[in-house]
Length: 64
Ligand SMILES: [Zn+2]
Image 1: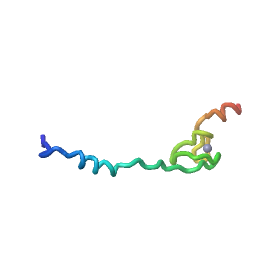
Image 2: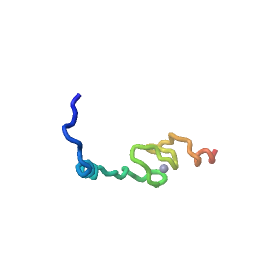
Image 3: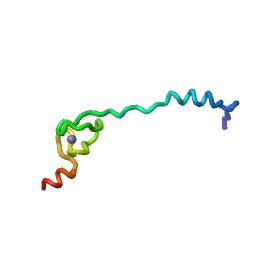
Image 4: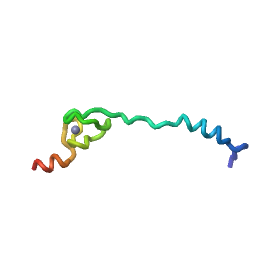
């Protein structure tokens, strides 16, 4: 198996890793309840996706 010729220095490792950053999640506002939600995800508050109820959330259960 191929082996690295030299040990990577701490400075090199750190300078490479300083570029690795967390990115903000793509947030949008729900069309129904206007609360922030993740894009391409079911809304956790009203349980809808593309204006269709797909999840029974606390709100829906209490209404019944
Ligand atoms: Zn919603």
